Image (tube, rainbow, N blue to C red; front, side, top):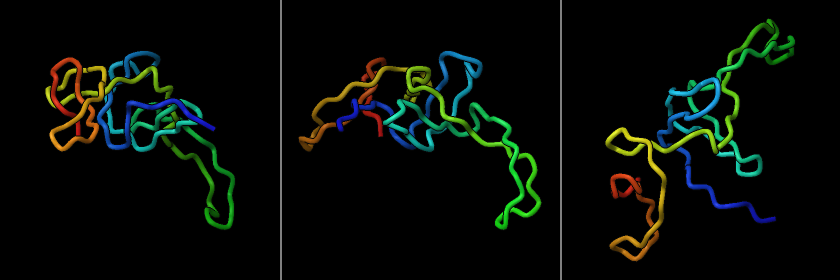
Length: 107
């Protein structure tokens, strides 16, 4: 099964551009390619009620990040601007990602 190519990677700094968390930014913790979603640190935090279990005998209320759709986030470049991402050949001949706004390579 082929998944579409994702321009956002784990470790990227992204900013939310739509939805209830609009304006917040954070680091991508996980990219879920099957669902076209990303998990962003301290963004879209939801409250989950956890039943007591042998691993967690107390149970209780737990706060954790929920995935957000990949179309609602944009990569932030080193200048702090949101930007689209392109790919081109680097000096060593390998493909590198770059910021289309500032024309700088992204790590």
